[in-house]
Length: 447
Ligand SMILES: C[S@@+](CC[C@H](N)C(=O)[O-])C[C@H]1O[C@@H](n2cnc3c(N)ncnc32)[C@H](O)[C@@H]1O
Image 1 (cartoon, helix red, strand yellow):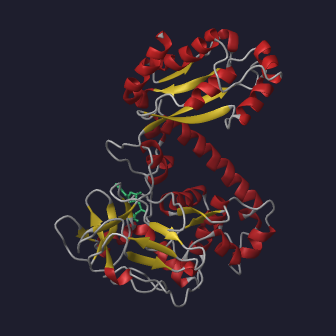
Image 2 (image 1 turned 120 degrees about the vertical axis):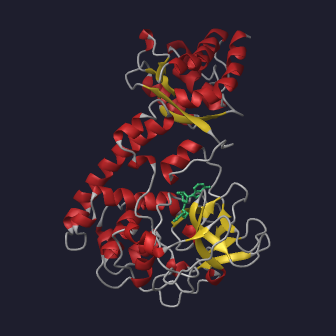
Image 3 (image 1 turned 135 degrees about the vertical axis):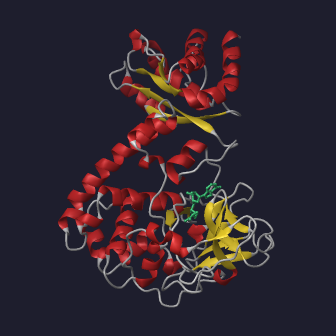
């Protein structure tokens, strides 16, 4: 594997039509004649049952010609009990063996969006350039809206889920159930950001070219669907030159997550191809899986729409924030930046590390007074160490008071009248799990 991945996955509101194998080419419908076989724990996908669930999409992007995809004949799509639609192997694989190679030409990337003869000029004339997320979302919706051409990509679009169960699609009352969790806080923030970004897209791109972007196919719901397609199915890599690359790879995006394998998909910067290797030994009929990453449930639900029970990576995202009107805010902001933090910092607490060092760093900076700041300027104080016993007790008290919040759905701890605006937002759900870990914090305080 060239480098690191990240994401993948979705919610299997699957789609699909008849197809026997995953397909031997990338042009035309890849699952066009799926038949599938029954096995004890997985059922082949029945096109007739699913037809109505197909996304109202597809008209299609540029023809890929010879696909060059390798390995598709050894796989078929099937429904699996927990993960939903996935890829089943028709042959044995030894760990490390190459299962699938998707050629670079078939990948959805920012580069390909810019190379598109119709969309490219619009993207190039948009300054400042759209973000990676927006470029890919517009590219996907653009291809989906085309009436002709784009046969290969169109077949991929047709196989994408019509709906996702990411938390951005939760109805208001559904999201309220999560009040007090970091999922709730972050989903609300993301929803607001999506609204703002969509408005920006309308003004900067979509509204300027109604001939290319028919607005009834570029609604905010379409935009959210496109974003979620990439969040849940794309893979992220860091190239040898340090640049980030996000790709959506047809067929490879049908692979579900398993914690039983390590990262086993790779991008080759020389060929531009994406490959999936066997993350373990597979027998005929097994589901082929990849590893999406060590992701806590709140993130899995937000980006991928599923959770894992007893997820060993579960964590609580603690949001530490300080109001800009708080005393000495600007000086403190510089100190946070020098410590790799922000005035609003989200820090993950886990059972194995319920008190990460950067929480203390943040709070130490937050509690600094004028004389401390002078001492720091004169290099007589080091913010990486305790400032004084009394200050450290203050900091630890604030950390330990997390437990208080458990009685409420959401507690704003340490909002002392004397320091309005300083505090951190804690939520209940995750705290219950973390309580044990926080006991350690109390012990520290008593010492
Ligand atoms: C990239 S997609 C994989 C293909 C997808 N199942 C499909 O039908 O298009 C990831 C989605 O599959 C499902 N999934 C993947 N791994 C899963 C797992 N370990 N447990 C439950 N669902 C999983 C989730 O719905 C997730 O959003």
